[in-house]
Image (cartoon, rainbow, N blue to C red; front, side):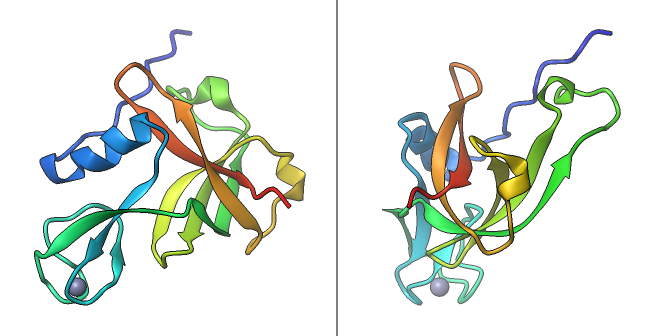
Length: 137
Ligand SMILES: [Zn+2]
């Protein structure tokens, strides 16, 4: 069976800084300069107050595991060789949520609300993906 190549993220012009930073293993988020709230995913206007007065700021890279699913089987896809893997919804300290994967861990030790921290996984020469692992104690 031929396994297709993994898809690359589709990058809008306003999301470009996020991916450029990830390539340097930095996690950045948009922040509204009018209402002071963080924003994810990248947008052209604040979803809270509709202002376009938005800046990029460094994120702490820390958060909690809000929810997750261990994928143990699925139809043949670009991700077949990754099975088992964990699709995870991460709640960052900054208050936004990010869909990612949990890595570098025993999946049996995962539990909701556990502290996590960002790590980075190179997908190809163009993209590095933010992923998460249990936070070091
Ligand atoms: Zn705002």
